[in-house]
Image (cartoon, rainbow, N blue to C red; front, side):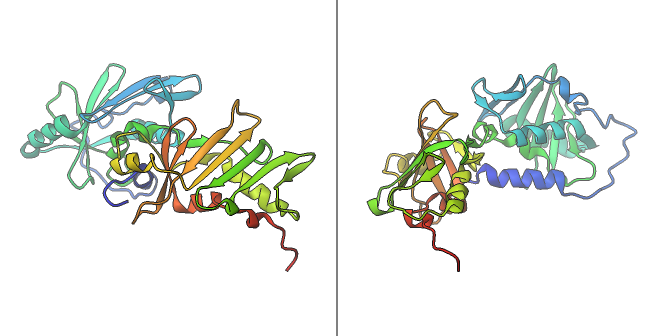
Length: 309
């Protein structure tokens, strides 16, 4: 995106830093505890909090799931990355006296404060975001930290905003559970279509010879359908303006696992962007890649069987 990078970018960077790396020998660890910040028993952690001047992320384990700010399901990938960092992080070296005060001030002003049980520490980075610094609460000393064997910047996981922590799964339906689907285009009624189950398979009014493979393939696009990121109102002014305009396409599904029909309102791309804004029937905003939306924006003629080549 132009000015605002979404979690799909940050997530890729975090994953790359954690899982694609190389070993770099650190300084002698004889004069400090290399595992000062490590959470060795992550299984015992049931809640933690990450605070900054801009956001507050409270994560709580409820049964087999993690809940964000007592409301939303947490993205499983990011929670795994977080605990991987907390478990494997090691002190690389203490920050020099000449830099310690400056970095400590930066952590206090623009960094994040992490609370895990009775352990509290601050997280910061250099301006280039290539080095990660931790500082234990009550300790003046700042330490540069790392995960041995991987690239050095691991602080990105602590910089995720609440929207980015949320589960990106929008709906989980498939051709085996969907009972009906309706696609309404705002530009032309000729593009509209409806798929509904009758007898042993689906029917599409106006399509006599149906390509069953294409029907199944299309409906399975809604299986574990994930957005790139969820967006809160007020975070991006351009999307707040776009969402009050008519959507380009409205898709409504009826599924045996849903108590009521579920709708996705798909908006046209903004100039210069390669993502679509989408709102659902719960008034939740999210963004999808152009590639993913293109698969959902089929028209009636797509489902016609054209016969063997």
